[in-house]
Amino acid sequence: MSGARDRQTRDRMEAILDSIERPGRHASFDEIRELAHLYRLSSARLAIARSRDADPDAVRYLNAMCVRAFTHLQVSPPHPRRAGRFFATDFPATLAATARLQMLAAALLVAGAIVGAALVAHNPAALYVCIPGWMYPADELQQLASSGEVRRQFLSHQSMTLGIKSVFSAGLFIHNTEVGILAFATGILAGVPTLLLVFYNGLTLGAFASVFAPVDTRWQFWAWLLPHAIPELLATILCASGGLLIAKAVVAPGRQGVAAALREAARPALQMVVAAIPLLILAATIESFLRQSDLSAAARYVFAGAALGAIAAYVAYVMRLKRRRPEIDLGWLVREGQPAAPPDSGSGREH
Image 1 (cartoon, rainbow, N blue to C red):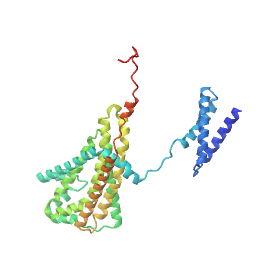
Image 2: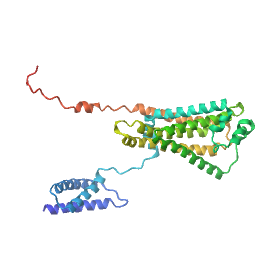
Image 3: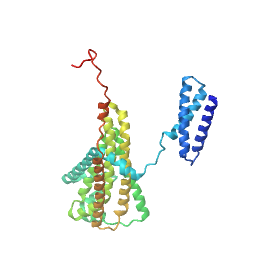
Image 4: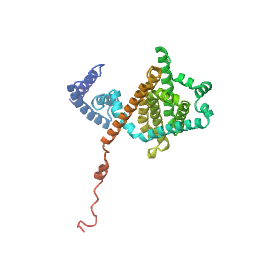
């Protein structure tokens, strides 16, 4: 009689599983409730069968049935993460936790820019050292540095077709992404290449800005640069911060060891890179389309100011979230979980 009931339970359980596992089929509440009841019965019988060394094939079959039922009863189905939730919930926590690494990368970038500008101001020949030839050939740099007319022509609007702008935008995105990924990936080498790369980017920026230091082109240059430089440099800082997070796990893993520290740092580090991708797309689009537009210098400054305002608003949002989430004190688990002191074995009387 018991064997017949067992077969009936297994057959019914298998029928429900086959039904709800069909493509596009979702289990109803009644099916889930019945499946939970059958799962409890089958789990108990599986434990008994194992303890009695029952038929191995029957044990494997029953175990497979229980595993199938478990996935529907206990494991939540994966839900696709939305970009809005990522930037509203997940990424702000990572951004707040890595604030010091971001400040380090930003400070190194600014330091590189100051050093680059100072080197060119002290020795104009340093311009050709700070700016690689593949970026700007030496003869073009010489013309920019020596002629105000060439500088004004460089900053002026140049008519380009939509196709050329699109190809140029794609090329810029690829190049900037390569720099960001390089800054992130080299963090595994204790972060030294990441730091050097960030400093060198700042060095190049400062040296190039010094070319347009004369008053006749100074304000036009910053109007030309800032709209696309703000998201581009922010993306570089985020990627570098992700690399430094990996470097921290390598250099100072703590008691958990390097492997465990890398596993723990991988998720927030990759989140930094993922957040940098929209910024790189935005920077490439602005550099290809807005930079080559007829917008006035004042309009470009307004655009750059709006970008800075958006960044400041998001930082304020992150700080507000950080203050809103109180630190969870788990010390009570230790305090309340401590065993009571054993009674005095000598005498039951109080002293």
